[in-house]
Image (tube, rainbow, N blue to C red; front, side):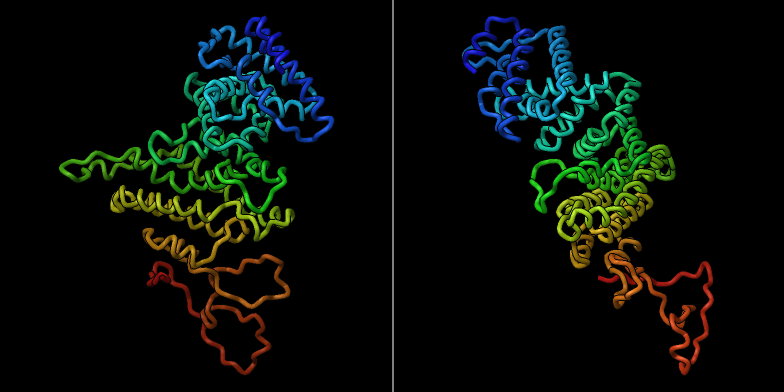
Length: 449
């Protein structure tokens, strides 16, 4: 590598960057012939840092900086290289050598250039770059993934109005990148503050992507060899946890964002009665649409987990991730005052209950009812949530039921209008009169604690 370095030092910045890619292409192509997964050693990484990211090898030397035109030309060189390289394994290892964080001073330059490269790839539809970026997102700590997501959101949702249309087109070009991008965006925008509510254009695009093809959010999971123990600190296999967080927290987060001002310590009657305070109609419909899509995806997971021999062994929705979500809901509900946000609290808890129920039934969430009772014990009362944490009525196994059948939560008590399953089996039993259901009559509900 030292001979290569000496020859590169005699070239201008752009020529040196182009040549270092050429030399490393040859180097890794020969390495891949003898080893399917060659180890990227220190030498190639140092060459890339010095001649691509302009970080000098000598500590005393001043770092070089490319001007805007030179940087654009460098991005074009890199885009063209990945487009013209036909071997995916070579593309992937070069991309990894370029942009895998090293924990040094070159990481800022590395992440800045990566954001601009992927943004350019979106603009000119360079699918090989997007596929490499999808793999990078899968194997890189989440701290760096959200930085890339933020760069793309800034470019296509904030800087130029209407540019979101360009980002929408990658749905058909690289679904794998879309899946990883959604996972990164849900990690970035966790609705913990008003600044971390996803922009409307971004939300609408993601909801439409998922509604059009719900399997989009399972692409990484379905196409990745998976161990039962997943690494900590990286993106999830699916964006399901982040999307559930969006749907559940959205009513409360938007209510907090438009929280009415206090007058003498109280909300004025005029503002309290204003239906415009809280989530607007468009946002409400988008989150409802997203919630439906997430539930539909959850319902398919039992089959996919069984096919991968992971049913009961791998929870795609970790219980440990539900704990902070429930704590955030509880905090938001207390902060907003139930008297002024009763509808939002009810909607949030309804969505939480539905997500928990379907996730447990499909095997995506592995926990016991006792775990749920403990977790949800401090939340405001909600009828649907109480039914979910109370659990289904236990029924004996039945040969006619398919595997994985999840019994109904309610079984009508005998004698209350229910038709006996085998009326001929008990001819001596007296028949109880059926009770007519009268609409509008309330009945007391006592939650199980």
